[in-house]
Every structure is written in structure tokens, then in C-alpha cells.
Length: 542
Image 1: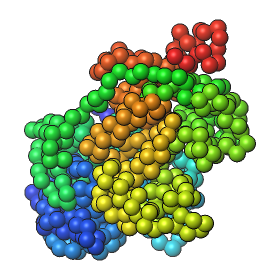
Image 2: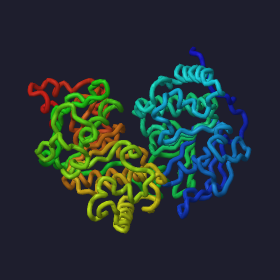
Image 3: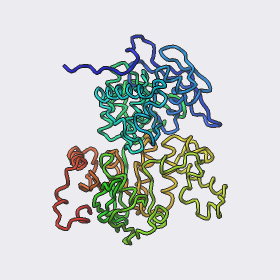
Image 4: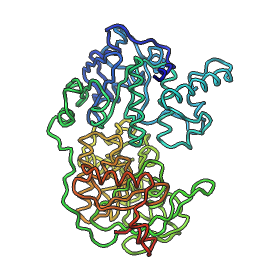
């Protein structure tokens, strides 16, 4: 019988009956926007409690109040039955509450160890504090599988490892209540499974977990109870075993929601985007994209599957004109894109638009108003300005129209982009790019951090573009999403295309097909294409 992991936490297992966390009548407004309205929520000690709701439902705001980022306008917070005032994250940590945010709170230019120690240095003698932190990080790696190199520079880590650093940072501060805001939004399926194993281990040690997620399958798999928020308030709390994903989806949006992607068979036309023997290099000459070739036709969606970190992001950046090509050729409507002057603006003029994977780093300027973010890249068009001056009335009218068409909440063009929820930020980016009349759409992680209602909306938009003759390339770590949308499935591993497939109907429900794609994701190549004597383009063109 294996030994029980030694917990690195300072708290003891809860033995009383008082809830670990009680929120009573919590309300919060930002100007005219009411983010939370008289919220009542009770989280039992030693459980995993899920919170679901549409983007803008108030989930993240509520947990930010618990963590001291905001103070409530009204209401009371109780920890273990005792009323507490939380005016800052320092207060929250002192009361045993930790939070891992959807958008990481890390300093890219510092090491993992420095980030973990920030605010918890252990005294003036940093060397002794660093030794203690390294030892505790080693415990987490050994006991919970949370290994991360303490000396690695955070800015050079992939998003999955950065997520891990945030979790380590929270746990090392002794969190008895751990709040996770969309923790799997940047994780591969395997990493997400590993996270769930960790959460169950933490629960067994008496830690209380609050899980904010849009993924109803995750709620069903790992939580004990789930609360549904809608328009700023809790409308339902139920035992997870007593509900279904469909019932939760209906409660989230207040109406019946279809979880399936409804679409007619594709009618592919002529080639829109041709990629021939494309290769890209990273630092030190490392080959990140290795001799990739494929053809994407008008009126079809290609879904690019693969475990995160296998070249999908770099391929997308290269196609969008952000990353230089080592070799290879890109054609749009049969015409080669000249290497000189190849950038997002020139490609936009050719009809290729890009929805980036990371909306914060590449899709928005969060300090800008939403109306300004909604015209980034097209702000020099005469309808929006003249010379260095913007036509404010036109910019605001454009944003109001996009917000109405894409159901952005709140519909407030002058609100700072940073003050929208992640899903509504994503809608602003999508509206900006998809309304440009594109021929080719490159869409990276289109529904990352997006609620169930918005996912269905985004999927309908992409299918409508396909049906209008647009060629769409969707890159997603969600295999279900790739299978639900893709008329053509491309699979990458180690920077190379390991195969392509035309999926059967209900591909996500076909275990044999899913297993075949999984093998390709693991690097087992499609031998029928690999054996093709024509090589190169023929291997990956259907």
C-alpha cells in the first residue's frame, strides 16, 4: 500500500460542520453595470463546488470579491462561519483563500522561483526563503505531479506550464479554499485529467475547491455540487449527481440550448489557401514547423488537432504573417504571397484574417475602450478616421452594431476592454475579424474561456462563413470542437502533419475514429499518406 502524500499545507482537516465559505447578499456594480445582485452561495468544507454561467454572469467578479480584488457594495463574507472583511488579496490569503485566475498573474521576465516567492519571500534573507520554497515545490512535484523547473524563465514557458506555476503559487501559500477560474482553458486533455487527479487529492486532504468553468463535462466529472449564475445572481444550486449537462445549460441561459453543432455537409470549392512545404524555426535554430503542406478549399472548415506545444501555434502565426518563414510557400486563391512585406495588414488586404489564440497578448489592448479594440488593424480605414484623428461617432456606432450582432455583454462601447469577461472579450475580437468580409479565416482557440451559449453562437458563425464560401482553419486543443466543426481534420505532432482525415458523421461519437486521431496526435503517422510516392503536398492534401 503506497504512502499517503504529505500535505504541504498549514491548515488542518476540517472537522466542523460550518461551510468553508459563505456569501450572503453580495452585490457589486461598476457604474451602471450590476455585476452581482444579492448573491447567496454556500460552499461546504472539503468539497469541490462548481460555478457555471454565461460570460458576464458575474462568476469571476464574485470570486474576485472573495479574493480581495474588489470590495462588495453590500453583503457579507463568512469563512468557517465567521464574518470577515476582505479588502485585499493579502486579507484573503490570511484567511486561507487562494485563487488561480484565468489570465495569469505572472511576471514573464522572472524565474518560476521568483514568481512563486513574490509576496511570500520568507523574510529579508532571500536565500533561506528560496531554499525553503524549492523544498516545498519539490514536495508538490513528488506528491501531486506538479513538477516545474524553479529556474525556468516564466516568459519562455508554454501556457500549460504557466498555469501550473499559478497553482503551485496558490498552494504554497497554504490555501484551505482554492478558487480556480477556468483552469483548463489552457490545458491539454491529458493535463486537464492530471489537474482533476490533483483536485481529488486536495479534496481528500480537506481542501475546499471552487471551480469556475464553462465545460459542463468537467463539472459532471469532478464536482460534488454546482451553482448556476445568470445575470449576476445565483439561480440554482444542486448536487452534481442529481443534474445533467443539458439541464445546467438550460439554467445558464434561461432557455433550451442545443449542445450539438448543426450543419449541412460541406460543398468545397476551389482552393483558397495552399501551404507548401512550410518550415519555421525558433530560438537556437530549433525547427518548430517541419515541412507542412495542405490545401484548404472555399466552403470548408479544417480543424487542426494536436496536443498543445506541437507546432500548431507557430503554424498559425506563420500563416498570419506574424512569424517569419524558414522555407516554403503560401498561396491565396492560387497566387503566391510574396515574402517581402508579408504581414497581417498585407494579408488582410488579400482577404486573410486571424483570430489569435491569446486575446490578451495579440487580440486586444485591454487599456483601450471596447470601441477602440473593435477597430484594431482597420483603424486607418477612411470610415473610422482621417490622418491621426478618429471619427468617434463612427467608431462608437460600429462597436454598438458589433456588440448587438455578437451579443457582447454589457453593450457598452466606452467600457475598457479589460473590464469585460473573457468570453465577451473573445466576441469583440471575433466581431472585428469576421466582419471584414474575409476569404480565409485563421481561428485560434475560438471558444477558449467561453460559456456554453456563446460557444454555440461562435460555432454557428463559423459554419455560416463556411456556407458563404469562406475557407476556415480552426486550431483548438479541444478535440471535441475540432471533430464537431471540421470537414477536414489535420493532425500535428512534433511540428509535422502526421495525417489528415475526412471525418464520418458524429465523429466525436465514433470511438474508432477518435482513437485513430489520438494515435496521430501521439505521433503515429497516417501510413497511407506517408507512403505516397509524390511526397510533400500530396501527403497532406485531400
